[in-house]
Amino acid sequence: MALEKSLRAKEDRRLGAGEHVDYPFLFLVLLLLTVGLAMLYSASYAQSEYDTGYEISTKYLQKQAVCAAIGLVAMYFFSRIPAFVWYRFAWLLYGVSIVLLLSVLVIGEEVNGARRWINLAGIQFQPSEIAKFTLIVLFARLTRGFGRNAKQFRYGVLGFGTALLGILVPLALEKHLSAIMLMGMVAVVMMFVAGTSPKWLLAGAGAAAVFVVIYISFMGYAGDRVTAWLHPEQDPGDTGYQILQSLYAIGSGGLFGLGYGKSRQKYLYLPFQYNDYIFAICCEELGLVGALAIITLFAVTIARGYWIALHARDRFSTVLAAGLITLIAVQTVLNLCVVTNLLPSTGIALPFFSYGGTALAVNLGEMGIVLSISRHTNQRKLQEE
Image (cartoon, one colour):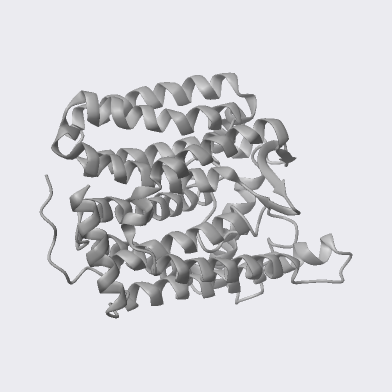
C-alpha cells in the first residue's frame, strides 16, 4: 500500500511537471486512424448508397467518424490519467464487464444472427470490447500482486485461469468464439510476461485446441467456416463465396492496385467489405505495395508500443501496456490471416480500419493508456518484489 501511494504521488507530480507522451507512437496511431478512415470510406460507399437508396455515400463513414472523435477524446483523457488509477479500479471494472456480458443474454440485440450487442439510449455497443480491456487491466494487477509467485501453479495458472474463465464463460454462452480465441491468446502472452511456466502455457494451449474442436463440432456455423476455409471452391455460391471473393479482390490488385476508390469487389460482390474484409479492398485498390505499407505501419506501431512497455517504470505499467499492444497485434494478425485464407473466418476486425464504433473508440482509449505510460519511460524503474 505504501509503495502504491508513493508511486501515485510521484506520477501525479511528473504529470504536473509536464512529462511528454511518446510522440512517435502518437503519430503512428493517428496515421493508422487517418488511413483507416480513408479506406473505410472507399470500401463502404457502394454499400452505403445501396442501403440508403443511392442518396448517401457516407453513411458508414459518418458513424465511424463520430466514434473516432469520441475515441480521440478518450485517448487524450486517458493519456492524462496515471496508470495506477487503473490498478485501483481493476476489480470493479472486471465485475462491471461480467455484468454487461451476462446482460447481453437477457436484453441483447441480435445482429446478423448473433446476440452480442446492447442498445442503451440509442447507442449500440458490444460489451465484449470492454471485457477485453478490463481483463488486460486485471491481469496486469494480478501480475504485480503475484510477483515472483507467478511461477507457481497456484498463482500463475489457477489465479490467472480463474479470472480468465470469468470472462470466457459468458462469451461461450453468447457463442462468441472469435472473442474467446482473441482473449485466450492475449491472456497467454500476458501470463508468459508475468512469469507463468511455459509448460503450463503449452498444456493450456493444448486444452484450448481440444475445446475449439469440440466447440466447432457442436456449432454448425463454425463447422461450415472450417469447411469453407479448407475447400471454398466446393461451394462457391454459399459457404465458400466470401473467401473466394476476398481472394479475387486481393489477386486483382496486382503490384500497384487498381487505384484508390476503384475497387470492383466492393460493389456488393464481397460481403462485409467495409468490416472484417476491408483489407481485401485495400489490396485491390492499393496493390501489393500498398498492402505491405499498411502491414509495415501496423508492425512499426506495435513495435513502438512494445518499446514503451519494456521501458515502463513499474511492473504493472509494463504488463498493462504489453497487454494492450498484444491485443492490437493479435487482432491484426488474425484478421490478415482470415482475409488471405490462412485461417478460417473468425469475425475479428482489423483495428482502426474495420467498421465498428465500439471497437474503434475502445482501441483509441487503450492507446491513450499506453501514451500515459510512455510519459515515464525516461525514469528509473521502481524496484519491486
